[in-house]
Structures are given as structure tokens and as C-alpha cells.
Image (cartoon, rainbow, N blue to C red; front, side, top):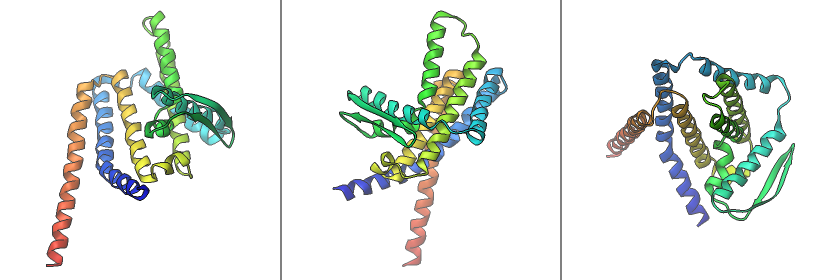
Amino acid sequence: MKRLKSALRFFAALAFLPACWGLSRVFIDSIAYAAEKGDGFSAETLSLVGGIAAFVVTWAVLSRPVRAYVLAHELTHAMWGALFGAKASNLQVGEKGGSVKLTKSNMLITLAPYFFPFYTFLVIIAALVTYAFLRPLPWLPLWMFAIGFTWSFHVLFTLETLSGKQPDITLYGRMFSWTFIYMANIAVVLLFLCCTTNLGFSDLAAFSVKRVLSAYSTTFGYVYDGINYVIERFR
């Protein structure tokens, strides 16, 4: 049964690859659309990019805040566990790793820290609470800088973690976990673009259907041509 599950996850990961490519093209389309509609060089967008760049510099020059990442990682497990009715206990955080005990688990709970930017989520919640009392939202460029900084934190630590041996990843197979995490991260970014630019959900849906269907159509075309080629060679 274990081998069967591993094989199914491997083939599922292969099936996800065209979707990964399609969603990557959706991301490019969405950025181009937002820029064309006037969101390309706004103070908010530049602040977002500045926040991303600021953490990249922090990552390269200063000591890395490993404990902060480990804390976010374990709290994300706990939070997503709570969404599925699990109870969390015995949270431990250290420089070399951490852990949290949950009464139940599933794929989303296990992989959540790799696609859910915990600190970015906290910044957005803080912004929404501020917006409830102060309208329009003050210091918007500062909020966007914080979002960019924390999202960059999430991406760089996630890439570093995925490059090593991580039990969360091996549990569901590296290839399946990587493809799922990639798609989930792009989905989170696309939803963020919908909330912060002129990109509407209908535009996003149209881009997604077009690009993902095109990716699968192209892939199936290559597979069909390859099968025909092999058949012709061995007739």
C-alpha cells in the first residue's frame, strides 16, 4: 500500500507540472495587466519591491533570524491544525529546529508552512484592524514595505528549507510536495495581487483558464507526438 501511494503521488506530481507552468504564465500575465492598468510604478508597488529587496540584503549581510522562522513554521502547523479541528501542545522552538504536537494531521497541515507566509498574514491582519478604525488606511507604503519584507522572509527561508532533508517533505514525496508547494505559493501571490491592484478575480480566472488549459494542451500534444514516434520506430 505504501508503494502504491508513493507511485500515485509521483504520477500526481507529473500531472501537476503543466499546471505549474500555466500558473507561472498567469503570474506574468497578472503583473503585466496590473502595470498596464496603472499599478506598475505606484508608491505602494515600489514600497512592496523595496521590502522584498530589503530582506534579501538582510539575508545576505546579517545573521539570519532562524528562531523567528522556526516559530512561524511551528505556529503555522498549529494554526492550520486548528482549522481542521486539531489541538496543539508542547510547542518547542530552537536554533536547530522546532516541533509542535497535534492531535491530527493531513497534507495541508503538514505542508502549510511552505506556502502560507505567517508573518505576512500577521501584517495583513494588523492592516485590516487598523483600517477598521482609520479610513483610509494610513501609511499604506509602509504597510506594503512590511508585506514585501515578510513575504521575502517566507520565500528565502522556504527555499533554504526545501533544499535540505525535511521530514514534512519526504512524508508526501519530494516531487509531489515541491509541485504542490509551488502551485500553492503562486496561488497565494495571485490572490494578494487581486486584493492590492486593479486585477479582478474575473481577470484572474480568465488568465488561469487560458494559460493552464494551454499548458495541458501543449503537454498532451508533445506526449501524443512522442508516442506516435515510438510506435513508428518499432513497427
